[in-house]
Length: 425
Ligand code: AMP
Ligand code: GLY
Image (tube, rainbow, N blue to C red):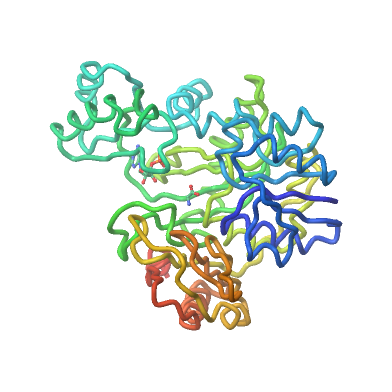
């Protein structure tokens, strides 16, 4: 099979690394890819926003399957364009992707299909929104309707702060994304991410993980795209996964199909484990980054047939994924200053040494090579130091031992990834 992976980050590096191991593979391409991915794939200088260019590339290389990493091209209709060109695609259509693009759409959709989620209201009028706050106890949860780079959720204790935020949202705090806002009930509990492949009709469990969104140790400081993740997540017991598949994932897949937008790709359910069972916080329509990095470390079988089945049908005939019993953890190394401002270009040494350690793989999220061929930082989140081991403790120790091999004075990481899970042991 000829495969094209779309994207350039750590998630896509992990997918490329895993797909490259498939005996079914005859050619692997990436767009735009990265210096790190070039070890396994032919990289093409086509941006993820260049839908025409991506379709042309897929045609020119006669690829059999396109695997799309990030949400943006999917939300813009890349899968629709590829289907029109007759090319199988792992990733949903634009209308199925509304699950991630529009919180208002998503909340109404859950309500239509009896998927457990927080009570909510959708507003574009400030007075109505403020009056709706009467229906809730603090803390108040306010969400921009549209995509706001992971920043469009505000949780405040104080009623006056909530009213001020309503005014700020509706006057464009997040641009057009917050012209409509969702106010919802606060759900107390522990969060977990559950992944499921979907071929339009059938779903197949594809792992559970927990991540750390805050930049600082002890889960403090500003939100980020994710500073680390681990799988399995102890809170995701078999009973919880079964309930989540039955009451959340299957109704979502069936609901999208029934409404004429069958979902092909991976459903990423962000769940709150509440005293009443799992409830949806949000859905994403692609793999998590960095959650994908730990999932692929744990998948013992050839993953390419699964990705292909999700894209083309036939998941019902596939065996459940064979999960390595060894837990995996990934620790994000970021450039000092992230998630605010930071400099690019600092030299990173020791990645090869870290990679040589048993059970360790360093996925590269934002690196490039300088004129001397040295590895340099080219983004905020830069390295995903990923390790597996016979216990979570062992995996954590390995990941941090690998980090200690990496010589990058301008980088930093959290030293407490997986603390919640370790505390349970
Ligand atoms: P979202 O972008 O919808 O995932 O929200 C970002 C984060 O805000 C989530 O990961 C949760 O930690 C938190 N959050 C969102 N909605 C709620 C809610 N209804 N109750 C409690 N926490 C929430
Ligand atoms: N790590 C969270 C996300 O990919 O959205």
